[in-house]
Image (spheres, helix red, strand yellow):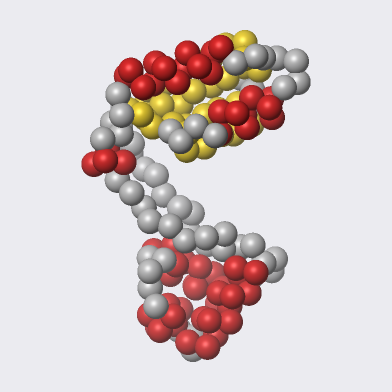
Length: 147
């Protein structure tokens, strides 16, 4: 979908705060309220805006362990394994990657016991050859890309 400068200003305003009213977005983007309404509807319909959500502080909710898990999968069953892993509520992201591993998983856990249980389940899946888990000690930056 083709976007222009007005769309980008509207999208950036939504990235800053998706709870802004059309009037507030119009003020930030320097366009009319009607323009904001029409553009947002078009961006939603076109699949550019996939949804709206809250940004949570998971650490304040008791999820103190963040990990990156690299997974080696055998016999061409990558999508099958990834889809199974993706159903776990602790999993935030699943990526196909290049390099020594086939997939990378980013997940959050309340404690080591929960992480251990998850890893043992994943390692028991058919076609999982090996895993490598990296504990994230400190997050310096995590952000949404502005347009």
